[in-house]
Amino acid sequence: MKETNTAARMLQGAFILSVASILSKLIGTLQKIPLQNIGGDVVFGIYNTIYPFYYLAVTLAMVGFPIAISKFVAENEVMGQDSESRRALRLSSLLIGSIGVIFGVFTYIGAPMLANWIDNSHVVSGIRYVSLAFIFVPLMSLLRGFFQGHQNMYPTAVSQIVEQSVRVGTMILLLLYMTMIQAEPEQIAAGALFGSSVGGAAGLLVMIIYWRRYRVRGKQQKLLKESAITAEANLSTASAVVDLKRESDWRFLKRMLVYAIPICLASLAVPLMNIVDTFTLPRLLKAEGYHDAGAMVQFGVYNRGIPLVQLITMLATSLSVLFIPALAEARIQGNHMLMKSQITLSLRWFWLIGLAASVGLCVLAEPINVMLYQDAVGTDTMRWVAFTAVFSTVSLITAALLQGIGIVKAPAVHLLIGAVAKTVLNLLLVPQFGITGAAISSVVANCLAAVLNVALLARSTGLRASAGAALAKPAVTLAGMASAAGAAYWAAGGALASLRLPPGRLVATVESLSGVLAGAIVFVVLIVLTKLISEEELRMLPKIGNGLANWLKKLHVLR
Image (cartoon, rainbow, N blue to C red; front, side, top):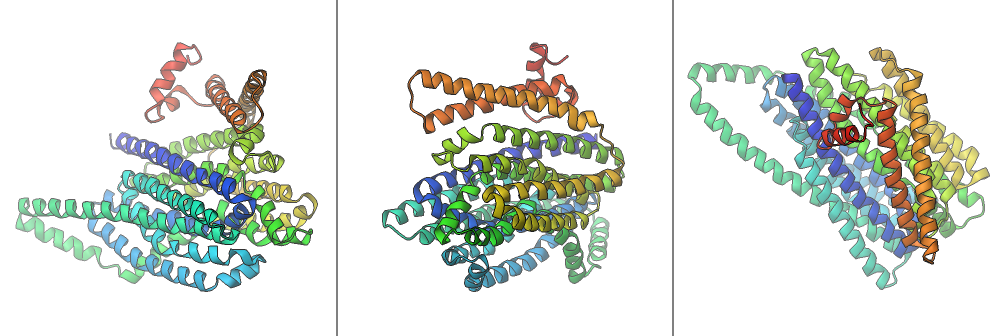
């Protein structure tokens, strides 16, 4: 029964975080459309040169230490030690809050030096504005981790949506105002980045509200419990508390850092690759003859496909935090079968989701590019960028699974190997192929990190995957999905052309949505027909699983 409750909580939490992550990332993706449409490619390039610094800080703050906190809280909950959970949060908040302030101050002061390393003076103001977010984001993320350790995903979900909504709303207002007063491109980009700091402050405020409610409820429950138990029970409880506090604060912080830092490093798959691009691509483009503004235009075109890739990787990151406390709890209980089933199922789902996202974006790159950014410039580059989705997704989920079974350092090493490969390949390919060369190097680097993680996970857990399940069946499924998406895209375009509608965003939107819908339907049908996903696994999907399985049975697809 306890295993069933744990699985149910995990699936419910997965659904909540999935929806919140998709909504918040959609909001975040939408912000880049008016930014490019109104500000232009120069502003878009400057923004995307600086944004990896914010994304790096957010990833560090929102994955590593919250995962560590959620792990400790989950373990303490199993043993009934709620006071230790609050102590862990208090100590980590003091440490990480201080680090965030120090890091923010140094980033603000060092903005000119960073701009010199990037070899572009237009980014100084933007770096200074985004450094303010480092004050709010770490504390917000620690509170999220605390509630995730309690298997309560609602605070995180609400905070994510509020943070992104406020961030984007602030950005759009400043974007409209600064373009109206004809500000310089670097000032417009800096104003857009200031929204990240305001959003972080709003997200932290939401988490503080949830924390205060939790504390009030906790005090009320404590008073009720103390009035009901005997003096002997009180004495036993007091003795237990003394025993729990034998570990010093410094020893606990050291243990948390030893666990959290490798997780932080392993979670940097996408942001670290973006940082490599930030420090190498503008320089390499300028070496090929582009001036500062021209290099920023090319950098902006290169980044057109990355928000869509981040939509998938953000989903993987949000879901991966569930597996750390769940696997930690299963490991404490000694339930190896539950651990193995969670690992197998998560690997299969994320591999298929990543593949489908990459192939779909590749097939529909041209209409999606026009739909979002008004023209088809950089479509070939976007097709290459699409395939970073599958490998970065697998890299993220396998890193989380390795951390869940206690292997925390190796994913960080694998990521660093990938970053080195990315740097070397940028130096080799960008002079020959321009921004498309940078996209190819990202695919290879993320693939390398993912393969190393999967190999270690298989060796450590004894997992075995057949070639048919891992490659052949997905290839058939994806070929069918790509054919359906492409056919729907061309059919929609032909139908609209017969109505004499001029090519543009409206036509591209209809083509894109038609392709996505047709591809998604065929993908679901084919993964069932090829038995990539069993009926039992399909019904495990929260909220929609039973309805989808019943619908497929009516169509005689599922038997």
